[in-house]
Amino acid sequence: MDSTFKIGGDLQVNRLGYGAMRLTGQPGNFGRYSDWEGGQKLLRRAVELGINFIDTAEAYGPGFNEEIIASALHPYPQGVVVATKGGINKPAANDIRADGSPENLRRGCEASLQRLKVEQIDLYQFHRPDPKVPFTDSIGMLAALKKEGKIRHVGLSNVTIEQIETARKIVPIASVQNRFSIIERDGENILDYCTKNNIAFIPYGSLGAHPLKQGSPLANAEGFLAEIAQHHGVKPNQIALAWLLQRANNIILIPGTTTISHLEENIAATAIKLTNDEFEALNQMK
Ligand SMILES: NC(=O)c1ccc[n+]([C@@H]2O[C@H](COP(=O)([O-])OP(=O)(O)OC[C@H]3O[C@@H](n4cnc5c(N)ncnc54)[C@H](OP(=O)(O)O)[C@@H]3O)[C@@H](O)[C@H]2O)c1
Image 1 (cartoon, rainbow, N blue to C red):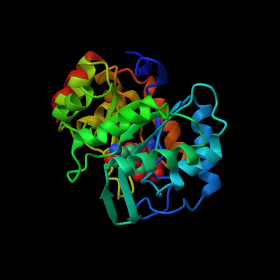
Image 2 (cartoon, helix red, strand yellow; image 1 turned 90 degrees about the vertical axis):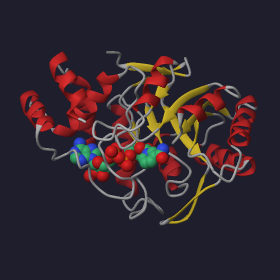
Image 3 (cartoon, rainbow, N blue to C red; image 1 turned 30 degrees about the horizontal axis):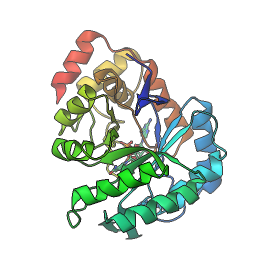
Image 4 (cartoon, rainbow, N blue to C red; image 1 turned 90 degrees about the horizontal axis):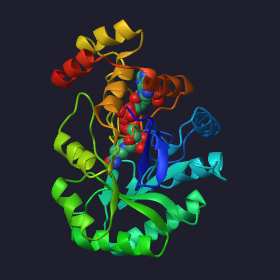
């Protein structure tokens, strides 16, 4: 099992990253994070412990999540990759609007550049295809932003294989971020497609959490997952992460947390080695 993956063939990152979305106002990941200093500390601790891939989006906050990352980490230590997303506007906690128009993608990218305090975004992900806008128009704008140097690599999120293939005809696609975990395996064929094509696959909800709910349902999982965890002297959610890491070398994890102790637990999952029998049994678990 590889411990790193090269996104787009050049950005080498450790395969256990961090999803920063929850460092925002609650409920709804809306507004400024209430414990700003605590959030900054957590981000710095993540980097100190070797995390060098951080996932965010304009929609988280909106804007505030990128701001806390920049406030904690800028100037970014060598090798730290910050991936953001555009194409979703969020005027209120419960009002999430896809807007994949070229104008909105350009506006969002330029705003993210400013908030992240960078001249180029390492990985800019199209948050979600917008049914009101031709998909090729959205991707065309991402290709233009890449050509202008504002984006290093283009990624997609919440997409089908057909959409990935359409996009790849317009611009190289470095990553795909879809919902996927040991307990939610819809779209496993998309993971396999990415593996075959050397595209990073970044599962969100890797601990089974819903974006608008607190807590991981896997933390207290019972049954087979709990048995394996007990055998390794770890927690079931750590086995869920270890399974993903072992499932394919192009998977980069972004478990989200607001506590340093959970962050440390999630990082510790990289040291778990499932036996072939355990891995096979977990594959069948569904
Ligand atoms: N592309 C998209 O459409 C999309 C959608 C949603 C999310 N995302 C990305 O995916 C990332 C992760 O998503 P997510 O946060 O919704 O789901 P997740 O990673 O499955 O789970 C996070 C939840 O699990 C808890 N948790 C984390 N580590 C734990 C541990 N060791 N023990 C017990 N509980 C633990 C956290 O609570 P504590 O704070 O208490 O640890 C948090 O409530 C986000 O940050 C975001 O970057 C992308």
